[in-house]
Length: 237
Image 1 (cartoon, helix red, strand yellow):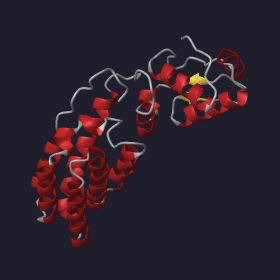
Image 2 (tube, rainbow, N blue to C red; image 1 turned 135 degrees about the vertical axis):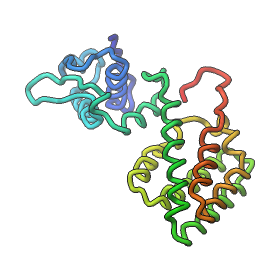
Image 3 (cartoon, rainbow, N blue to C red; image 1 turned 180 degrees about the vertical axis):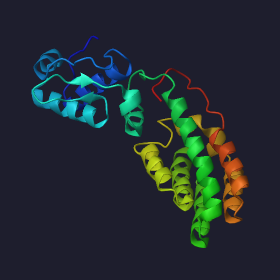
Image 4 (cartoon, one colour; image 1 turned 30 degrees about the vertical axis):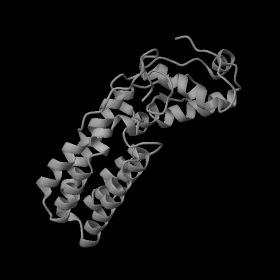
């Protein structure tokens, strides 16, 4: 691959981003050695500390294995990486190394949200059911400001996921909402079909309050699979 000198600023972030994208896109295959710290520093015109910090982050994501005194070798991210890699990739500013990543995150969100709503309806105590109802009221009151509705929507879904009693879902939710948005940087303006459906969100809260697990799951699935509009121009989302 063609590595390029990085701009000043958060130098290790740029080194990390270039190497991460090269590994995920296949420019470096599993088992390949990365250039040495000295070579990377020379090509990227950065100091070895920035390179070392980038390699540490790559290792934490399961992309490389760093051997003291030996070569740093690329791992198969499909085997070793976790959800943190997906969240890292949604935050970059150029072409995604995985073309379907935003779609994939949306599908994961829909799956988790649908079952979390079902479990919340079945498991939540009265205080949590009331909190969901209050959260949907706050969400509806934010209309028609899409940015405010987006933030209120995240608060509503946090109540639902917490009410599900599923710790794994809660941790996944925390990863999905880490950063700017719960759905991999899809702007609220592209999610109008979901966000402006206040009646649908009120139905969801009512079904949870009534303890209707199947109904809540169906309504959640309808909301979370609403069409996402295409951007007006090619953007990183």
